[in-house]
Image (cartoon, rainbow, N blue to C red; front, side, top):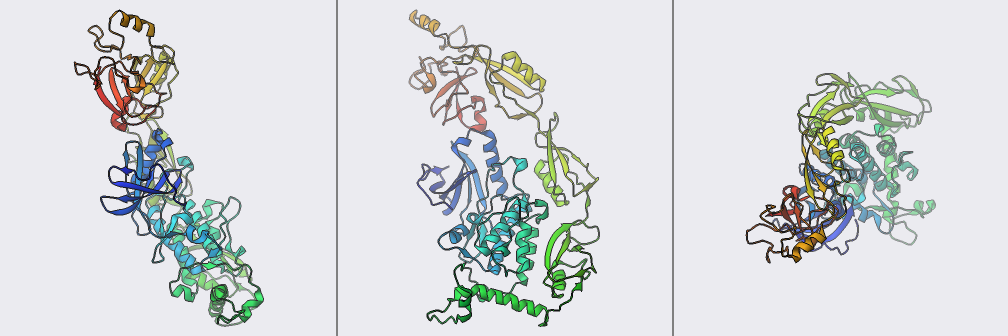
Length: 627
């Protein structure tokens, strides 16, 4: 967590309710502030979208959509998203504030620290239980790290900091196995004190730093951080099952039984010989108790191994691999441990038509194979049948389709967007395989979703060229004309809606075509002759004609608007057109007025590229009336 620093938004109140305090951190989603909810009288955390993303309709939509989705996730181990909204120029989301220290704060200062294996597994189990609630709803975190895990006063780990925007494109963004990898790296950090991260070439193995670590712990980290996502546990729930199994098999130290969750300093300079004479009485040369902890843990592991072997001497010969098909993983491991061959046991998934989900469906090598000391045995856990019936998701939303397919066991889902003249954007049109057909769970299910028609960029095109482009896409266009300071006559200087907007077929796009620069000389001559200027209403033009309002004295400052009076209104009650035409390239500030399609609009706050006709959706422009 970053050290809070002064920020221009500190002290601002959003919607009269959320008072922003110190800045906590900043990321792709925006800036996070500690805040106070005046209505509920409680501390909260508020994420405010970065100012430079406010003009990006897609970013604003994604931010608010993700916040709304996260509001549906509830779990004691998660910082819940409570609300979201837009207050003038600020888009924000409100989340529960979690008191306590982050793991980054605990582990990152001073001497390198680590937790005992059982404590590390307890923390990770808390994190996975919280993530499991999100994964069941198809929601991933994507940025699990020590600074996103808060330890409360009771020693429980809670997850915070769900990103509201991702840097990567949606089809390349994080998934549930990304969260599993990050939790595996967190477990590695907690047990070893090493802040290494998983890379694309090899998994993390804590045994490299702690050679005496039980093989099960090494397996837990290595499987979760495997470079190939296919070989990782599929989600937090599956990984939690493995973590709990290993945690039950570990001996508990006195620190564990007492609930002491303080991390253990890593000993890097203690001579091996000094451990033999440590008596813990505090005399000179004695080893402090915390320095003897690694030795005690290793001794506990040794005692457990002797107990599992029946207090017998290790036999010299090998043994045959027993048949453990159909057993649960814990029972299978116990049978392998009873062979007393120090076998390295690993886990992976396979499809099975006969064995229950989670039970052992196969082994490598096969049952009856001769094993030697230190051999590796792979237990293949059943993921259920490979083929399943594709559920009926046609007519629903894309998110509903993803949830239904995941419930049916399909984890590989590809979405193809295509035009539809009948269905609203985001509606599922069909699937491959089709509804009711048998689908291979090892392959992807393709979901075809109605996309509508994407409005292209038309700025800079000629009037006819732009019209032909829209007609070719099945869209209808209207033309408004206005003077423009830089666009040549006949060129498209503005469009509504903006590029990238999705419309149904035959949707309407309004093109603002430039009439060229305003005729300043002609206007001056008319003024000198006492005749009304171009921007003034007259009986002949009906107050603006085609809507080509000139810049005149009003400019983008709003000006005095000619004869409209101090409040910007003429005697007739209509707004004056003697203000500049809207220009998509100009940044307008609070109070600036523009003339657009025969009406005058006033900006409520700074805005660029958003035409006044989108005022109702965005709340940026205030309609001051016709002119």
